[in-house]
Image 1: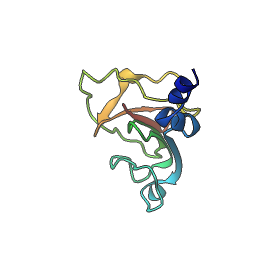
Image 2: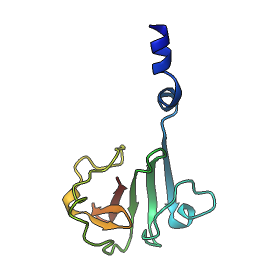
Image 3: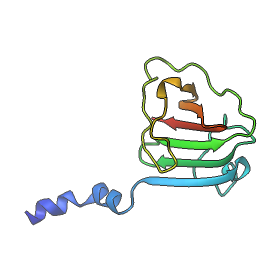
Length: 126
């Protein structure tokens, strides 16, 4: 039994339990988000006037969720491929909405993008 328990608690399983493969960042402006100290890459389609950029990434799978504000919001992205329109966000956080209208998403460079709550964008990669 001890051998089985040791095997179950070894390797990636134990490492992920101690240090989950999740990284989060909050960047005040796009300048910091694209700066040399940034640890999570921000997509190029994020507007130059974006602010309070929150991003969370699963470093094992590459899945991400992101929120940012835009004082002069404009449409981002285009029609999503029908085969991926219902892809749900891969993770949650306290700043992530509980009921996100996934069907209203547009898509850009592998990201799903939803605009809501005044001038806030929410985006995710599956």
